[in-house]
Length: 140
Image (cartoon, rainbow, N blue to C red; front, side, top):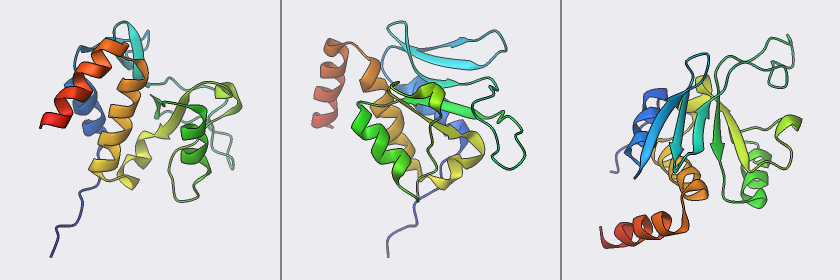
């Protein structure tokens, strides 16, 4: 019998992002982590903003994580899936990224989160870095 997949944790976001080649972490003015490759963010913990709020109470979400995605069609697929914890807001219309509340990370398996972080990195890494990493992945 196959082992049940482990649910992802917020700590996994940090570990996975830093594990990507050439990744580094910067911190925003409120101490929020911003994971970058080549000076471009690919995952970041967003500060509370009025566009991401509880629809019932209007209270701003304080735990939003932004992940870059490869394309608009990828974004649409992820946010239109009723079972998906990912969302977007009008502020991100036309922006190749998806949002996830940290409190919802556990709705993903670790493998799903790995894929999201890797795709975010690939969306922002230089073509040569992406090709080198993908080439290495095929050999392992």
